[in-house]
Amino acid sequence: AAGRSHTQEARTRARTAEHLHARERADLARLVDQRRAELGRLVDQRRAELGRLVDQRRAELGRLVDQRRAELGRLSRLMSAHPEGI
Image 1 (cartoon, rainbow, N blue to C red):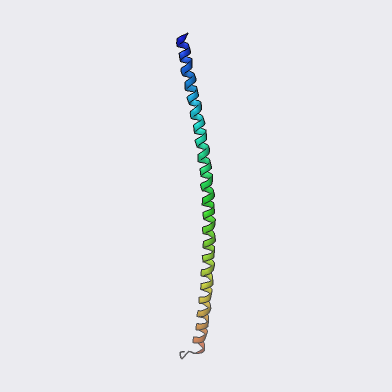
Image 2: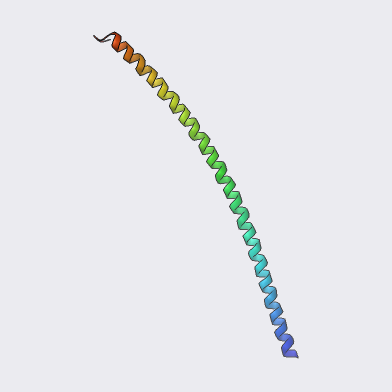
C-alpha cells in the first residue's frame, strides 16, 4: 500500500507540474500576444507619421516644381520676345 501511495503521489506531483507549466505557457503566450499587439500599434502609428511626412514633403516639392516651371516659362517668354538676347 505504501508503494502505491508513493506512485500516486509522484503522479499527482507530475500532473501538478504539468498544470503549472501549462499555466506558465498560457501566461507567456498572453504576454507575447499583448506585446505583439503593442508593437503592431506602434508600427501603425509610425507608418502613419511617416506617411504624413512623405505627403508634406511631396506637396513642398510639388510647389517648388511649379515655381520653377513658372520661372522657366517667364524666362522662355522673355527670350522669345528678345531673340537678339537680353
